[in-house]
Amino acid sequence: MPVIGHLKAEHRQSGNCLAHATGSAINPMLTAAGYNFRRPLAWFALCLAVILVVLADIRASRC
Image (tube, rainbow, N blue to C red; front, side, top):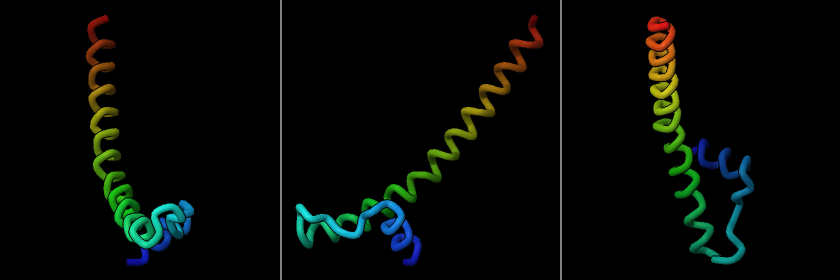
């Protein structure tokens, strides 16, 4: 999967010197988990922004 390779290169995750082969095997898994976590986080930020805009509009209409 080229995405994981690019992410590893961008974030200096070529290998884990402390855990030897096990650490090197865990790094791509953690990279993929972080990459997939960005999507729900972005969705949550969008929902929060919409809620704040609606609340600000309600507050402005009451004044």
